[in-house]
Amino acid sequence: MNFETVKVQREGAVLFAEISAPPMNLLGPDLYRDLNSLIHAAEADRAIRVLVFRSTDPDYFISHVDVTRIKELREVVQISGGKSSPALLFHQLSQSRLITIAEIAGRVRGVGSEFVLALDMRFAARGKGIFGQFESAFDVIPGGGAAQHLTRLMGRARALEVMLSVEDYDADLAERYGWINRALPANELGTFVKALAHRIAALPAAGQRTIKDRVNDIALPPADELRRDAELFIEGLRSPDAQHRLAAALAKGFQTREAEMDLPRMLSDLA
Image (cartoon, rainbow, N blue to C red; front, side, top):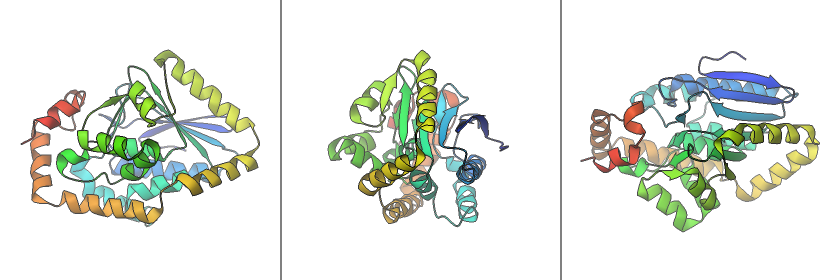
């Protein structure tokens, strides 16, 4: 398992995958291609039971989609298994026999948030984990499953607050809202996740698979709903207003590390 944007380390039945896509872990064609290959390779190796995602970047887990390369990304998505959107790859991971965990110490916004929402469990570092769905600032709907997952996790009112406010939510508030399993002190996060991953990997697989399947039957959004959200996202991006807002945001530093440290403030100034 050799990838350009993901570093992997195996410990028995647990595979740790560290996202490393400078300058700020944007989801572009290269990262998508590697995630797709990694997921399929891990699925094919029956000795792997648990897949843990981390980031080598202390400030960004997956920041969001690379808006300058959406056309390229869509082409790669369609080539990689004939899917129509990243949301369907994420959905495949939700349905996987693998138990998947996100260890978050940095920003997860937009499609980055949607990626971790598709995983089985999410744990974040207090004072470092930051979550956001900012798509409405560009007059579009989240296209990777946020509307589906957040509404199921948080309820209608909080999901609307998150998606309409274009605000950042720290790990403690994300825990209260149900966005993540729990927030932990930064110096305890890695140890906790590692111990949990190995504990799960050591327990019987058949029962875990049945439990995950039954929970998915209750809580996982249908693929058709994810596909529809992705279509609405692309339709929205084509509008003149969305294009104007994207251009204005890029001019203000959108997709640069420094500007996105306080993304809500920058987006609130868009014309």
